[in-house]
Image 1 (cartoon, rainbow, N blue to C red):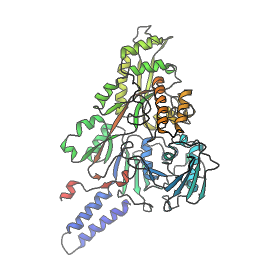
Image 2 (image 1 turned 120 degrees about the horizontal axis):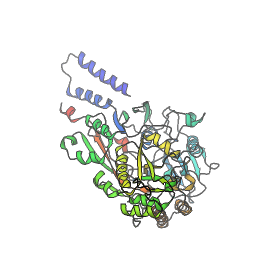
Image 3 (image 1 turned 180 degrees about the horizontal axis):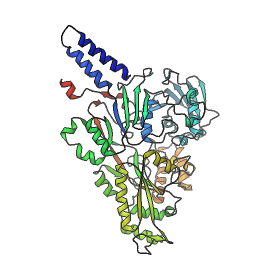
Image 4 (image 1 turned 30 degrees about the horizontal axis):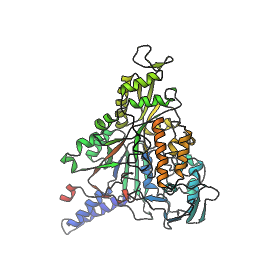
Length: 540
């Protein structure tokens, strides 16, 4: 697509140079400028290095963002998080909520021109369950594989062994072509053949270049090419946004607080504030001898000053969380009390658990072993700044915490392997929350995302019941009970929900976020973006 726009620009230049009719007309010059502006890729920041673009294997949000441009989901989400047609133009749900019949859009094709078939859907869902996909397997673990089948080329029937309330939203997954991934080992196949509006043109250590598909089956997006650049350092990203090297990128709350009111910046950047369905937390490896006792984990939570984090790091643009739901989700129980900062109380609780500074070296010990551990964090200022505040507070109560920083993909691999003491996470909830994948005992890593190894029989029962309870009030009550148990057990130190800040170049128009999922993962979302000529170009 880029070569075509360059060729068009050269034709305009040659025509002007060879014309005997004098200077170019304003309209021709405007068209030439428009071609030049449109041919420049829209550059979007990714905070983490991509590890894979295999849809079933991906785990990171940066990967998910890129894949959302390459793959269409079976069912999409609107800006207000309601299901909308995508690959499936319509669907039917049986009265017992166990059978879903999906009718694929007859226009739908993969980027290699082959049609998207019902057999591709069945293939993908089976691979999600059998590979298994860490990201999606728990969504389809109740699928009846024998009864799930293609009824014809464009109709698929998916049957489940039990009815689940949020099952329809599980179909926001993409479809992988069986003719590409059905041969050999899918986990080693690095092909990227999707049904979405873009194809991967180039991928290297700096990021991924996407170009619009010539043969896309829906309305083509106006952005011809997108460059997703990996910029882990927030300071470097901010400089890139100021220079115009990046058109959109997440920025820190500190940068946002200082920059949003500067008139000279607002001429070239727009500042977007988004509340996502996500929260920050510290997960304790419950196999580690330091963290096996809930009373000790609660004591550590008493040493975390959320108020200081909210005010000093986020300028008030964050909210304390007390459990696995964000504050404005219906599943959240606002009556569950958070553990307030109390350094003296933390020390007293640890003493009651047998931790004392017997050798007077400033670090608590028990049975000759010091209370010392490493908090693993992904690269980035937010995690580091919170970790430093926690480190200082823990030192005052006699606990030594080292901070280990790793690049995003390597960080996640290590956590999945269980090779950590404690780790800093930012989890994103689904529009209809289901904490089963994070906390049910059947979902322990590496096959699931219960990376801390949490196990509680009553919590398991509540999560199982909530998945199949269709009465909203009773389902809310189940999740409220679960919230209370998790707040008591503290498998995570629950921290804050942060308002995510983005800076967007003014040349990029119609960047309208969704409350809950942000700039991406909804319709029309980024597919409605438009590139406008810079003010300086229009003035010429």
